[in-house]
Image (cartoon, rainbow, N blue to C red; front, side, top):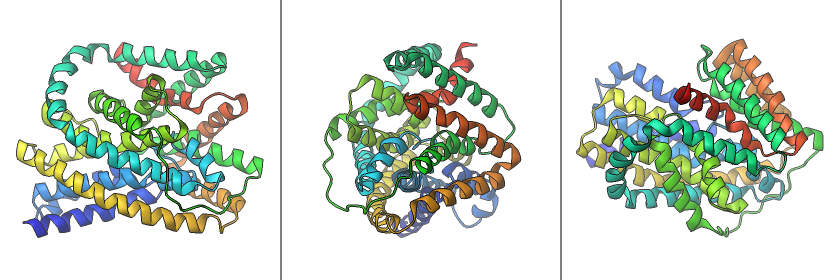
Length: 394
């Protein structure tokens, strides 16, 4: 039994490496493929085994997905905000440090979240019924607070509302994996275009020990905010990072730790939410919910697997980031940017079709506005916040 679980976990880790490092191949996409193949897979594996593969893949992915975000500028929903300080650190020769900060957050958040699971199990069932009718208003207050904090409030409002309108249109389209072109344009291609315009070059990357100042505050914030995000519909790690950073003062390094922690914490605590409320708030957990009913026995296995995979994924992240650090400074950055833009266009075309390419073009144009006007790119998270608020308030 133990050897079988190790093999199953190993398969999940390998899939997590693929989804974490290859742009456009998301955990949710592989989870749906696994679900579609479940009739075949269940001839050879138990439902629990299939679910362990999905959980292992999702946890591994949460540790590795900042590598392409930092080094290649290709974000996903969960890592969209990490690309901003991460890219700055990369241009200072500290790309390794940028990724390691997110790994510190992921591992720290995983361990701290695990320690508080007994308490969170009780709190979820108490707090969720009290706030479920006010989720839209809570998000509205947070959004207004974000805009008012920006020095250029009018442009912050314009960017927030414009991205929200784009989000409403895009999320109501009949396009699969629609978030890929949306976030690639808002946070990826737009940044690469600005980099081309500025003629930046990638310096030699330093692979040294890191100083994670403010790590305890950032990790604590990731668990608290990630816990709320785990049972609030439509609130993912990226939105949670925006909210958390508004209420807890963090350094640039602390923000990277927060973003890394939230991605992993959200996955872990989504299992808590599913077990207590029988509500799946995460793509991977939704797939698990369609394969198996979670009793306390399965719940214990899943969180144990998450801990084991987290340790392995941390080591993998260190090794793989060292490889990326050595290679990135040896390539022509201008050619790399152009190649990545073309790769994103091809992937968007293949995965989402011509409508996805239109979404990519429009979101890229909008993504350039904050850089030109000097407002925070975090306001572009309105692309998800406004659709969620409209769902609860209208």
